[in-house]
Image (cartoon, rainbow, N blue to C red):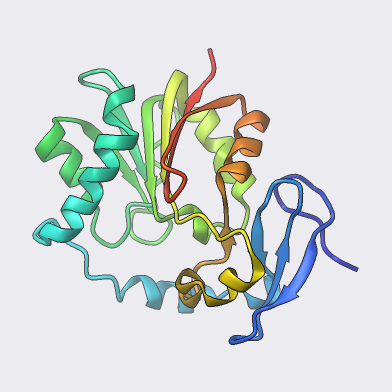
Length: 217
C-alpha cells in the first residue's frame, strides 16, 4: 500500500529509481517526490556529505550564483535595512556574508549541523532566505510552520531548490538525485500548496530553482 504524502496527506504513487534502486513516492496532488524513509541517509552520512562542500566568499563563481538569486528573489521585495535569517546556512555561511558585505543586510544564521543554536526563538524577521536546503528536509511542514511563525506580517520567504522534472524518464536521469542527502523534491505546484496551507502567496518564481513567498497580512 502506498504511503501518504507528507505535505498534503494524499495517496502517493511509488516507483523505483532504475540506477540506484531507491524507492520514491510521488504525490499527484501537490507534486512532491520523496525518498522512502528507509532510503534516508544517516545523520553521519549526511554530515559527511555536507563537509565535502567547498563554498567560500572567495569563490567568485559561487558568489555570483548567490547574488543572482538575491537580486531576483529577495531584493525587489524587501525594504532597506530589513532583518533576516539564513535558514540552513551550511558549513560556511557565505550567503549571510554576501548579504552583509554587498547589500548591507543583517542576517542571523541557523544550520542543523553547523550553527545549531536556535537563534530565531523569540524573534520576528522581515525575510528568510534558504538556499539548497528544502531538498534535505524529512518533514517540510515542520520548517514551513516555523517560517510562518517567525516572519512578520508581509515578510518574505525566498527559497532556492532545483524543481524536479515532470516525467519519470527525465527524473530517472536527473543529476540532482545523485546527492544522497537530497530526499525531497518539489515543483512550483508543491510550493503553491505549502503557500496556501501556511497563508503565504507566491510573488515570484523563475520556474527552475528560485521561488519567493510573502506572508499574507
